[in-house]
Image (cartoon, rainbow, N blue to C red; front, top):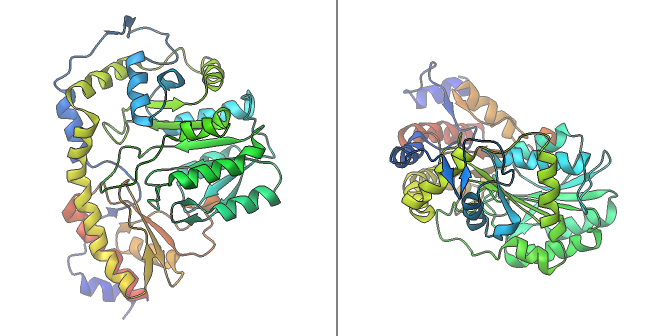
Length: 398
């Protein structure tokens, strides 16, 4: 009897016409329904802060929206701008600006190399790969990027011009960087600050599911250590309100912000101020804290369900996994170094996972052991079926 036939016998509810999906970190419809309910109570604003929201202009965004962004990112208001839907788009534009226009202390070029803690966010790696920027991986330690590995890269490689980080509930490992780690990391970068970019994607700044360590604002640490001209922090409301219609934020030095606005002026005559105004009004009706409390009720049980299935696999020494206190993902490492086989077998049974190596630059997982699990989108019953398939495959193959 083949492995597939065996699993199908043990899971008789499997249906060849059903496809289950744990590939992307999407908000569940129930999460989006919360935002839709609040939005239905809001009249579309056409004027705010003395600005006509219907027209072009205000490339830095509405003052009220910038204030919202500075609150989410724990950054200074006058060093924060509010823009359109995706913080990933913002990071793409920051890299573009550094490559083609240049910042005072961030000038990427065709020979530049970027440090990438792994496992990491696949879209970051694809973004950098598309620009031809070389990526050098470093592992994590318990409280952030492995400092010894970062030091070795800086000392032994030429043209190392930056790092890309998700500092809170990192995608996919769930790491939250300690203040000590960030201090030591920025100190390592300081000798290279004539041309270095710290790309700080704070996508999960608000997404605690359990008690998580407090973090000193990273831009404050950057200022203390003379690295603020090298620091670019992005974030958004995409996973707080509507993933397809949020607003994004960038915080950096005033010099960098001015250069970036000048760069964007050749792309767009201004951001979507109607959407920014809607979000400002939204968070007057529902505070960010209350919004996240409602989202937590939906997401936390899903995280508990995933742990219910993968904890016994770790007890049997079949895997290791991170136990995140927030964010959107789990990072699963097979002890048998057979991630590709697990993913392929799951796919044959109707469960879609990201391709092997997705959480590494160039889609190359050197150990063939890492699998990202994204449990937020399915409802609990569907997620339970996903995890039944996944755990059964891991056990059967091992």
